[in-house]
Length: 135
Image 1 (spheres, rainbow, N blue to C red):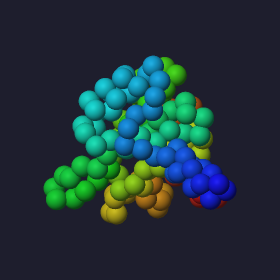
Image 2: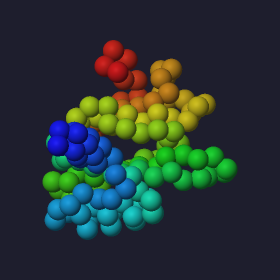
Image 3: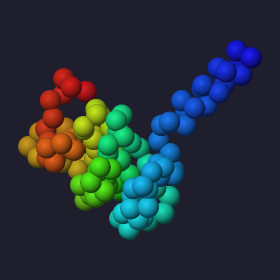
Image 4: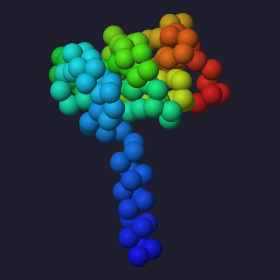
C-alpha cells in the first residue's frame, strides 16, 4: 500500500509541472485561444508557482534553425502581457515574477555581455543586463 501511495504521489508531482494542455478553469478557453493565435499548435504551458501567470511557448523552425517563441499570459486579467520578438533558445520561470529568456548564440543583448534577458511580469519591464548574483 505504501508503494502504491508513493507511486501515486510521484505521478501527481510530475503532472503538476509543465504540460501540453491548458489548465482547468474559466479562463482556459481564452488562454488557449490567445496561445494558439500567437504560437500555433503544440504549445507548452508553464504556470508560475501561484498560478497567476502562464508562460506559453513552442518551437518554430526559421531559416533551418529551431527557436522558441513565447507569450506570458496574465490569468487574473485574461490577457497577454508579453510576446517574444527575439530569437530565443530557451525560456523558463526564473522566479515567481520573472521569466528568463536565453538568446540564441551570437545575438548580442544591450551593452552587457549576457546572452539572456529577464522579463518581470509585475513591472512589465525587460532587464537586459540582470544581476548575475540572482541566478
